[in-house]
Image (cartoon, rainbow, N blue to C red; front, side, top):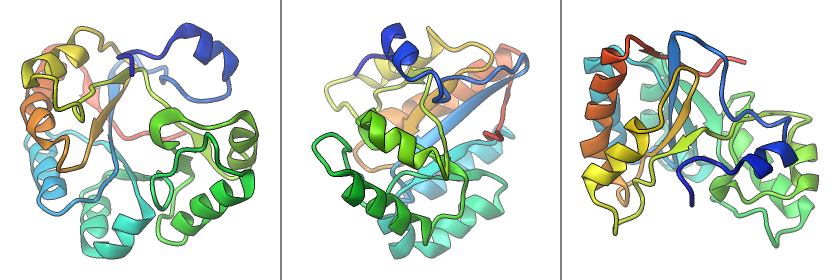
Length: 202
């Protein structure tokens, strides 16, 4: 997956949210949680830098770890629906995809949605958009890639971040090695830019 989404994809799906006009803010997001041990570390790190973020959580993880989900909300962060079971929309019927999204909605109370892997069909987008604002991203850190060094993961973010950027990290054990190196350094870099980490409010 590329660091920044190709322009032709953004043109094909202009109604999706790829970045946010904000001269003073950037928008860090965390996909796939909550994850015991990882989520608490992220919350602690964000608190240290007085930063807010948006967590696109999985319904199955919220069902398993409701206390962790509540900790995210209690800390003043935003949550979004990331499906119940991390489904790829491609090759999946519209009915089954919506069923998974709706089931997640029983556990996640939010007007925001992010499709896993960005693999979603136009018909799925149209259907989901009736209930949700679909949030994509401007930068993906690729922290989940174990072949990537922590230093490169950080560079993926800091080389591209600007005011209004939506940045993807992952709240998962798989991503923790890279994310735990990149996140505090990204937060410091954002402070040095004179920007603030904000929740996504649309």
